[in-house]
Image (tube, rainbow, N blue to C red):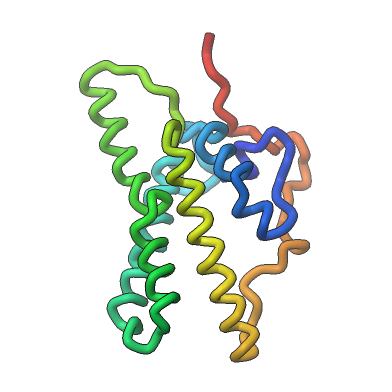
Length: 169
């Protein structure tokens, strides 16, 4: 999402990925009506809804099945991410789009315009969870979740920002 909504800047490490700048690209830069680069053909909002539902379900399973074995702080952060706007609002945005269409209202095709603070909080909690996962990987000598320098970037620089929202005059 960040790649497709970027003005050319891309995160190179986890702090940049979980930054306010990334939230800004997601909230103000990504045209959720644009076709996402997936098969079958679908727009970004559809992709985001499916993906966030999958993450929500995984976190729900963790809380349901493993919360008794987790420390209280980890249960709180998993719960906070599960309930975050990042994972819950995309489904609501689908309903907002349906109502807009029924009423004939025009709204910019943006995911979280006006909800930036709540999405920033979601990213902060997600970053905390990510760091907890890294601690577990180190403690139990597991495979690392992400190598930021190995982040695949498009070979065609012109691809950066191709699904960027551009306000119409």
